[in-house]
Length: 144
Image 1 (spheres, rainbow, N blue to C red):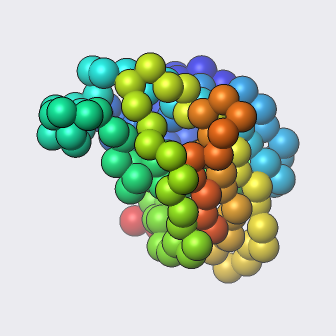
Image 2: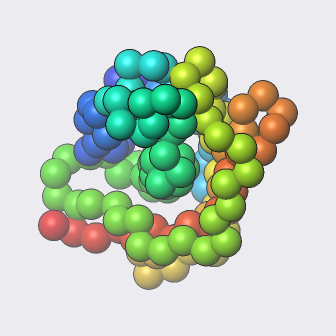
């Protein structure tokens, strides 16, 4: 999926749209998304001026956005302004290595159990073959 196709499913826009491409998708099961981390990201001005590091909360947000695309595309739910897919919970978040400008963040998300509009996911973010972050996420689809 291109960035334009991703925007058909997510309401996020710059500077908060944190996935650039989807390179693999298996309906209702898994997704692999890419975030190209550049020095031009607005958060690098203050995090940190002496050593640019992508904030961990934004890595987790990128994982949640990939999870949302997985669910919404699997359900055929495009972004029409009548719903929102909330990030409602996180368990076991771990940050194992800093992510810096020039890194390509590869986000892998597997869908776990789902029911009543709430889904659980296992998410991993890697740079190359190195795991930089992992977490279990909960997201909920709600009408506006």
